[in-house]
Image (tube, rainbow, N blue to C red; front, side, top):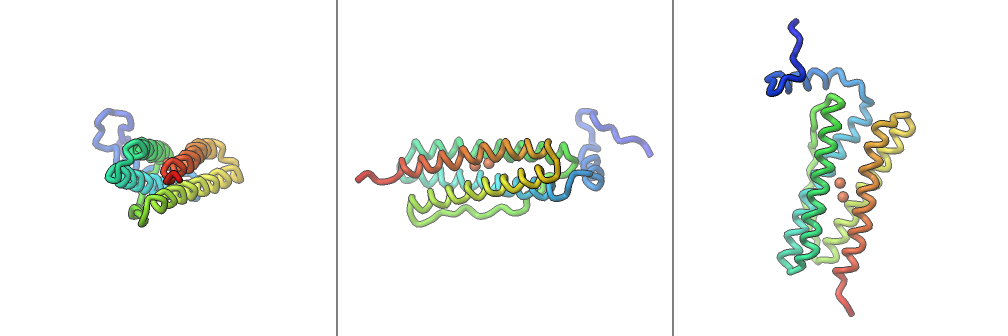
Length: 169
Ligand SMILES: [Fe+2]
Ligand SMILES: [Fe+2]
């Protein structure tokens, strides 16, 4: 069988190449599962933060609205890194569980929703890191650790912003 050209720019065989390598990927299936769920969670975060940003803008909180715009772009960057990782490991990106944005009835409720979601992400990446550590998968452990650190920073940022949005008494 004729070899599939792998590095030719604009190769029409690119997707076929990834589909073939998907079948033969030797990466731990649990790690691939973490990556797939991570992609779903990061895409959910993009939608959630953009929604909150718009809500805040409508209510006149322009400064924090812009912070959420920036946050959404950071989450997009995370999704981009995960997609790159999945392609490198020979699997097609497959986010399948985009959650609807949660709104809440009040600004404190919206902020609490966002804080809870980011805390969930921290727990998720913590479990991914622990799995990789238990299986001596240092490369993927490092990958998830970086995301874990950045999500921890988000949790702290949101806690600060919650304070900023509290009505002064
Ligand atoms: Fe993220
Ligand atoms: Fe985040």
